[in-house]
Amino acid sequence: MTKDILVRVRGVQTIGEEEDTVEMITPGTYYVKNGKQYLIYDESLDETGTPASDVYKRQTHNTVKVMENRIEVMKRGLVESHMIFEPGRRTTANYRTPMGLFLMGITTSLLEVEEDEESILLRIKYSMEMNGEYAFDCNTEILASSRKEEVLGIPM
Image (tube, rainbow, N blue to C red):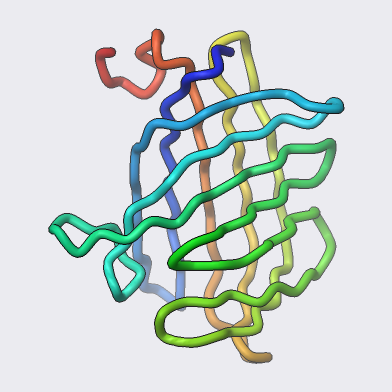
């Protein structure tokens, strides 16, 4: 995969029968260091933490670190957190937003990594607790592909 990539992040949060889907596509950077793969990208958020579409954009810098049987997501900027996803393990993370600090519990049930020469696809299923209370279930997919490819279905 090339250094210059496009990153598509798609998250589906499920609470009971209701689902909320968020998706974004943004340019990013890919590299390998010490046997670990890194995806780096920025996301623009508005004051409520949803993708921004106006002039009040603020940035969160994301680093996704992919290791065998473990993915870490580090956020810096408007939102700050260091989340660890490992199948069958409950981890905790502080999640700082403009609305305050939350203590999250993350129980990962599925972690899949599929890759080829031009892309890497991460699938993570987990349950989320906020301040000790069950909040929702989440399915997240992160697809990174070389910008020269049309892997995301977007002509380059």
